[in-house]
Length: 152
Image (cartoon, rainbow, N blue to C red; front, side, top):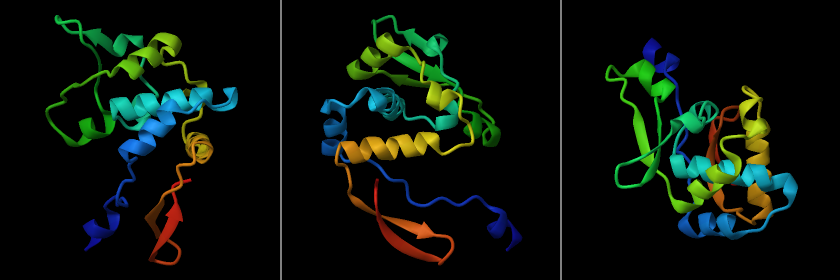
């Protein structure tokens, strides 16, 4: 019983539908959201946790013998719980390569604000701007009940 109480628990993850993702990708955003959009899309393409994304640099980019660019990284949280310590590799889609060419991994608001909600707040603003406001279920710790809320 004690192990159940101490165990980390997560709600069902939210994900974007294909159409929502395409809308964000194609939406021209103001300069104030440009870095947020690029960081969000790049993180979606790579599929890593924010803690791993913060640590990515150009040293994490490689190209296969066939000329396919990919990102490689060692997931820190997974590494603590698994014995294989296997590096993850993710091929990069063209839009991700484009973002990396333009910005590298230079997203100050992501890298220099660990432990804050600034990243989440900026993503919510991006989703609002792109009108991605689907209703999702979320567990409310205070009430102990599921509630229906907008993604943004």
